[in-house]
Image: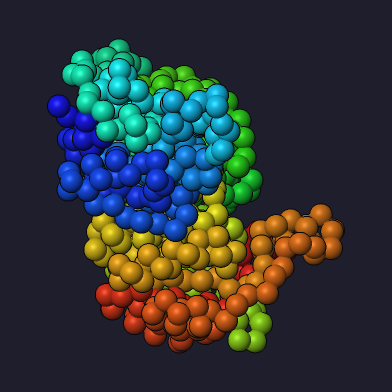
Length: 530
């Protein structure tokens, strides 16, 4: 008879899972061995949240659920930040944790945490497997992770359960995304847009399940509408397209809010306000287009079109519009020209502005380079300024905004693609995931780590300065990173000028091994710096 562990591994393989990321404990050696025997690769990480970050990036790139595995107690607790990232960044991640021995419940408390109570607020499902419920629960968890708006699920299992035989379960059908759109809805959308002279399109993370990039471009060109993206879908429309206006969701006064204020109607496609730091309060006519309903929170809209986004965009785009002659590409062109006139500060000796680094990276990398960022001033800057030219090649924790994400995500991206990946991280963010350098070195992945070295939590330090408070608790001493890189057998260069940066990036991207580029940054160029 098939054991519960074997059945679980079979269901993962049937769902297309090729890798599991994790850090196991003694209580889940049975499920770990079943994964091995089923031919699924196990990637041993150094921190449990890293496993969830990697699983989320895996899901984003492959379209398959991402899977992470940890032990119970401290392992499960350590995974919480990664699971919360999957929840707020809408990633279909399955977290498998060990469980306490069911025969000892109520008899001891060592490492006992009520995992269901802990995880249910950030999961679509949290359940402990028993022999009786295992088949149905495993199938349901796998299906639920991708159903409706994607998100994480959690199941726990103990060796005692994993090694027992499993009775046959009733096959669980994956929930279908039913279209709630008919011809009347499409006509209503066309009629709403027909007399608008300044339509604008806002796209968000909900584009990724169906990836309707061509349909988005055609709709924008048909309407003559500027396109604003959020960080999670950068590249959905090329940054050099005449209608691409910029990114939203990083600060309360992102430059593109200027265009949103001028628009007379909004088409929101896969838009999710979880990415915004400024509450959404626009009352102008809005059409909501997504694969899931407008909720959590619901934003005011005139029409809600739920279904196959690509088909909806094609249908809505067949409309004659009255776009103003000074709108669309002309308005975007003037907007870009004004932004380009912004003066930049002079960097300190031996330091370079983040703008200089990003220009160097763009000039010395291919259009389709994959880029991950960590969280801090550099994340805000990169999301606003990076010129993404290919979709689904930019990875960031934006809904949760969790430090430590950048390096873990880059490792998963390089593991899956085999291509060079650039990770932009702050020094504090790298410190949170420093142990993963061991995994990077072990697997010899082509990741170029661009370390924004300013020895501070700059985003918080800037907030102190804006409020007239002294700098306190936000600056620190950094190690000599060349010795850390050397200890792991990773290439290293320190750069403080454009010429040095150009050479380092070319060297890092031309090789097939990891490199740490220590960028001596002057944070004066960040948009959040006082």
